Image 1 (cartoon, rainbow, N blue to C red):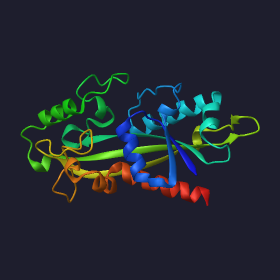
Image 2 (image 1 turned 120 degrees about the vertical axis):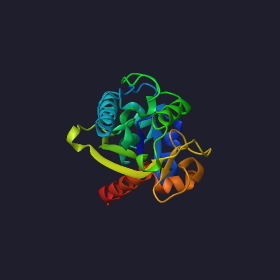
Image 3 (image 1 turned 135 degrees about the horizontal axis):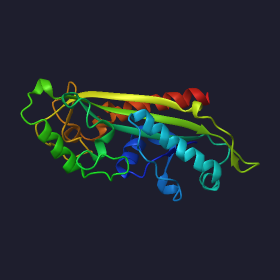
Image 4 (image 1 turned 90 degrees about the horizontal axis):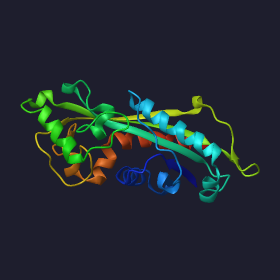
Length: 231
């Protein structure tokens, strides 16, 4: 069994990742490691934020390996996976981008996330009056992945290098609708209409979204990467 430690406490994100990956992997989260550090998303890019989360968690686990041994057999493949993702709207010069989760509030790295409804309302307000051809957007996801190897004999993680971190990305092109529609999903899903679709992610539902989404495309690359590495 391959184990992924997903560097988040976001229940919606974890649920989506587990559904997409299916039963081939065991998914752990920061909720399984209560003492793990809280990552600060202070980079200007998705890749920078995802990489920072992985490094912070890997460094902590090398000093505090016992939670891993309690959860995973030493010989099992163990990966830390962190993602950063968000919405890029062309008419807003790529905003909200890395600030997607806190768009309606303060955009500082340590600011708390804003409610989804507030983020959506701000986006609609900024795009008010824009015609359909000026509402193009995309969801972007970047995954940072690092395999840690733990020694049963020394009860510690073997040394790792930041150069071992792999970056995988996924993009879903689309546009922003004129009003929030649908009840599924989270975040900007009620506003985002994927390319070649007539409904928002929130209307299409989880099953279809998890085949089209930015995160699904990045996770498919992760599945292929792990499969090749373990061959």
